[in-house]
Image (cartoon, rainbow over all chains, first blue to last red):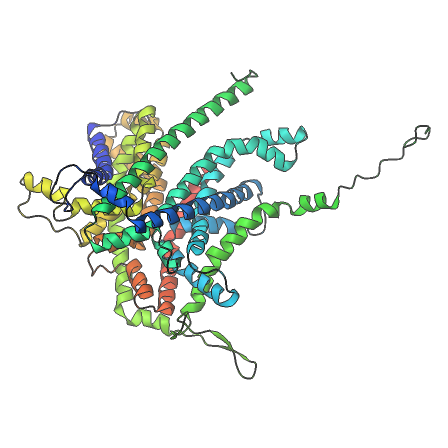
Length: 281
Length: 316
């Protein structure tokens, strides 16, 4: 479609975008408010940011969340890529229907149900085989389970567009199936792996419901600490924390997006050159 | 092989690959399929079976607080004690039926608002130039990456009594008393629309972008006014996007916990909150498991619709 959008449509779009961003911008603005009251502007100050550095509760939770997120996303990328390869490359196998269902279901399953059922499993396992103890470990296990779906969906669409002929050519030239995959297909799906790893990272860092349900005493992730503070009321230090997180995530997304797009353009150009039989410059 | 050999060489014996290679050939794919299949089976599917089992158990005063269904009796007979009381209880105590209906209503209206706001947005993006499209899509996607919890919290800052919304409306003279939006149902609607809008816009955009503009020109040439062309051409063709987007908002919105818990009042009875309380405050796990199972059964319909359209869209 390349008809011009009407002014009315453009206005709705701009209002919608403003609606998406305004609350976050206001939040960032208030994080520099000296006054602890939202209604009063007490002058510019970074006092709440400084207070963050002296809040071991928040720092510990942030560190725990980060470790959980990195572990879970890495695990999810490995499992999710395997599942994507299985679904795209092996047309028929026993359990294909099951795997498709289990990959798609977590995307729409309410977190609270996933969390409760997983908790029930962990409790039963602990009672029968004495493992796993509830805490960071169970959070990681639960996060890997729902993150895997996102990875599979992302990598799957990428794999479908990857040209199988490259891999076959590599195998004709003597590479084993694994080597051929690693040399030809992996670089093509690499951007999907990176972006899904980042997506898993944010999903895991953000998860409140599942973490709260499957966690045990002592393991409080950042969202759990934020939630309990928000429920308690006035929270100027959370303003500062939220602004930091929004800022860091926003910057990362922009940089990652730009980098991935550039890598993609480069790859396409090289591919075109190769197809024309020229050397890529 | 000997050097001086005049006889024709015997046909080479069929090359037998090492046993490992043969095994790999036949079963190697299970090294790829196996790990994700096993993981999701154990940590995603089997938990539901456990929930099913526990939903038939009695509440017990121990840790974990439910009885065993299977017990080995004194005479070595396995005794199965299925307890349907948890399910009966769901339908005798109003709170579960009411909260389910209430969640459905909340999710329905929020999805409707999301659709009404998201459709024109997706339409405008689909009609923008290619370079503007990339930027606009980025703008829609970035909030999707930022923390859900923090965005709900940010919204609270805007709509609370001394928040920005009331300040603007008061100064414009549109209202004379601050709106008490917090802890009301409209605040929950607003929260869901705010949080899930990108989920609505993206699938809508995906179908609207593919729409062939010449169809609209044809409709105009045949004398169709734009609104008529929209109803006859654009809307039916974008139906897959409408349904995918609506389901992506509707299904998680029914089970939403964070939004009603922060923005809704203490009397807001969305099923997610009731489940949470059943679990953490009442510690009645068998009933919570039964609520989850019934909830899941009710969700099966919308999930099936979503999958159906999702698969269709992937195939086209």
